[in-house]
Length: 138
Ligand code: TYD
Image (cartoon, rainbow, N blue to C red; front, side, top):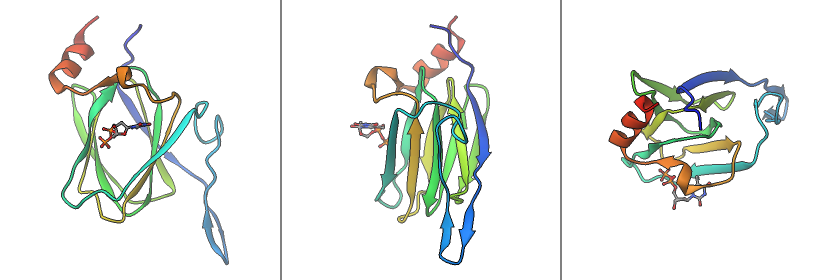
């Protein structure tokens, strides 16, 4: 399998705002650039606990912080970037080899994740050194 270079991109979602409040729709191959096979959400994270600490060999995901806030660290093996997620109208598309860590997760944080594949533990790289060698291994 070809190893995709790690990549991430911000996506701005259109908000429907009316007197009742706000609404955002996520639609496959419209504002989400893939077929959505799986949706999960991370919530009720205990204060001070960090999550993630893995990469995927072949998975496209969009992360949306629909409530609260967190700091998402994305690391492509060469450079690390910390992105504050606190806006339900913004998504982060992650594809290719990207090590991700979630820190400073607020108690009310709900992180919604859309993925283009079903859950598969074999797709995970959970060891950072293995991730680095996987990135450079042709
Ligand atoms: P994990 O990826 O370790 O999440 P985090 O790093 O945020 O704590 O997943 C936690 C557990 O949930 C683990 O036992 C695998 C399981 N899981 C599923 O069953 N389906 C899924 O789609 C995901 C993402 C995780």
